[in-house]
Image (tube, rainbow, N blue to C red; front, top):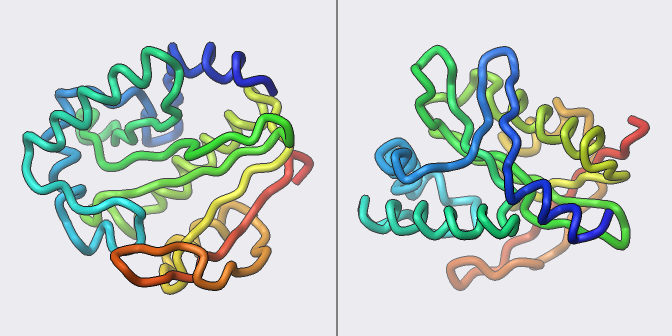
Length: 188
């Protein structure tokens, strides 16, 4: 897969539908929904970003993403729950691509009010299918900070294989964190 193809596809982010969800572009009108979970320390505990300090920060972030979508340089979908009128309850998408090796990494975050409902698994499965079918990827991986067993369980439900840990591979909030890696190959 060439970078130009990635930019072309993601500059007009396709909408993905699942049984209960719609994955779509994030919009400024999602500010309140995103702030509801992005402002929480318990949500960002195992993520590489910090809690949003106020709604204006969230709004500015979503405005910034509009320009990244326009250039095809952002690969994340808003997860919306159809039964709740399209309320944004998290995000899921590709965090990076490795075109020479035809692989990518996915990530996801869900509002805790919607945990234990299989939403992360449903959204990530749709993104993985998109990666294999539409992008022709060979390998998709996901990473998690050691201790984030909930994320590891999502990866296992997706059929990903645990490949191991990278000891102290990430410095987060001044502390080194061990990172686990899982992957799935197109033929799986």
